[in-house]
Amino acid sequence: MTHVVGEACIGCKYTDCVAICPVECFHEGPNFLVIDPEVCIDCGVCVAECPVEAIFDEKDLPESQKEYVELNIRLTKEWPLITQSKEPLPEAESWAEKEGKREHLVEMI
Image (cartoon, rainbow, N blue to C red; front, side, top):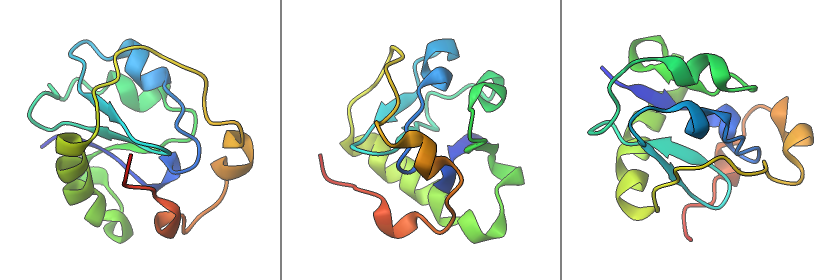
């Protein structure tokens, strides 16, 4: 099992999780972060740090978000590593409570 970034991260991209990660397993896209399952040590410290509760242990991922397992794996290979916190996206607060954001995920850098 690994940890997975789910839908709630889309449009927010808070990086509190990045700052606390002991193994540098996060990768950054235009409006979303992903976790590299090959690097993640399943410590879980990132889960509590995410202000929008977007990070799940894979076994706890809601059924409606199962596709995010594959998305995290695939996009990790395409997006650059992020090792330091940065400001969230400018409209993060307005995106934080939205649901059904999958269509807004920008995959190309």
